[in-house]
Image (cartoon, rainbow, N blue to C red):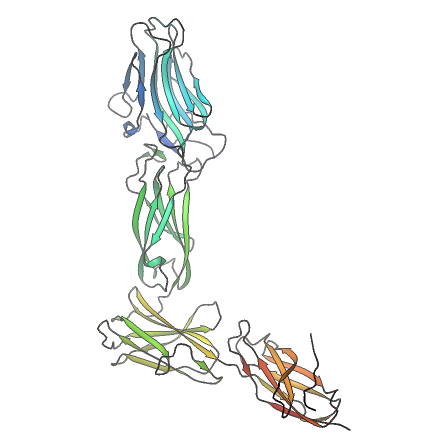
Length: 518
C-alpha cells in the first residue's frame, strides 16, 4: 500500500456673597457659565469692564469699581430732549462664543415728563427688549432671561414725539450689576515631556502642559494618577474678585504653560501600568453649569524595582550568546546564555552597573516579573545562563535615578510534543490508542495534529486532530479498517503556532505500528 489510509474528524444660577441679588435662571444649562461682576460693591477690578456710552443730552458718570459710589448714573440735563435721543451705558460681549445668558442689576429708575429709564437686553436675531418702571425713589431689583444675548444697556431718554421739556428728576442709577456669561468653546490641550514619551518610567519625571482658551481663558490645570488628583493649580493672572465671581468676559489668560513635576516612586503611582489624566478647564462659577473641560489620558508603565546605579550608560547592549542575537530560535530543553555590555559615552566599559532581568511569557499581556540582578564587570560585560523553558520576552533594565535604559530580547523556543502508541502490532481492522502531551505552561486547549504515512512514503497526511486537556495531555483512538496488505505505518504529532501557547510549532518523534492482514 503506497498511501496512509485516512479518516476525517470534525444647574441653578447663584452668586456667592451678594446680598439681595436676583439672579436669572436660563432656560437650559450651558457649559462653562460664569458670573461677571461689573458694578459689584465687592469688586475692586470692575472698572476693567468697558462700557460704551452715548449721552450727549444727559449727564453721565461711571464710578463702577472706582472711588466713591459704585454706580452707573444717567441723569437728564436741563432743556428740551429730542425723542430720537437716548443716553446710554452699554456693555457688549466681545465674542459670539461668550454670549450673555442671564443678568441682574440693582437699579433706581425715575421717570419724569416723558423721560423714561430702561434696562435693555440686545440680541441681533430678535432685536432689543427693554424693561423699566417708576420706583418712586427706592432701589428695586430687575432682571430678565437672556437667551444668548450680545449686550446689556442702561438707557434714559424721551419717548414722546413732541419731545420732553424739563424732566429734571428723571434718572437711572444702577449698581450691583452681574452678568451670567457662557463659554461655548472647549480648551485646547497639548502635552509634552518625559512622562508622556514612549518607554518605561522611573523616579522623578515631569509633564509639560500647554493649555489654550481664546474665550474666557484657562482657569485650572489638573493631573490625576490612578483616579487620585496629584496636582491642581489655578492659572496665574485670573481676575477673580471673589469665589466664582470674575472681572471680565475673559478673566483668565488665553494660554497657560507649565511643567508639572511628578514622582513615580510616590503614591498613587505604582509599579506597572498607571493611568494618567491631564485636564484643562476654563472659567465657571459653582452652582452654574460645569466648566468646559478638555482631558488627555495616557497609560504609562512605571518600574522602580531596579536599584539605581551610581554610573549611567550611553550604550547598553544585550542578547543571547556572544553575538547578542536578539531573536534566537531554540530547541526545547536548551539553556541559552544571556549576555551584554554597558559602555560610557566615551565608549569605555562601565563597571558595577546594576542590570535587572525580567521576563514574561511570549504573547502575554501580563506584567514582567523580575527574577535576577547582575552587575557589569571591569570590562563592562555581564552574563547569565537562562534556564530551559518556553518562549519568553526578556527585559533588561539599567537605571540611574529617573533615567532608565531598557533592552528587550525575545527567546523563541520550539515545542516538542510527544506521543506513544498502545500497540506496535495489530491486525487489519484493529485500533490503536494514541496518547500524547505538550510541555507547559499554558498547555491546555492546544490543538495537536496527528499525521501518518506508510513507511517509505515521503508524504505525511493528517488523519485527525486532538485537543489537550488542562494538564497538556491528550488521547486519540484510530482504527485501521482499510489496510489490504501488511504495512508498517509511521505516526507523529504536529503542533503549529497558535493562540497564547508560548512556543513555536514543533514535531514529535516518529512512532511505528505494523498492521497485518489475515
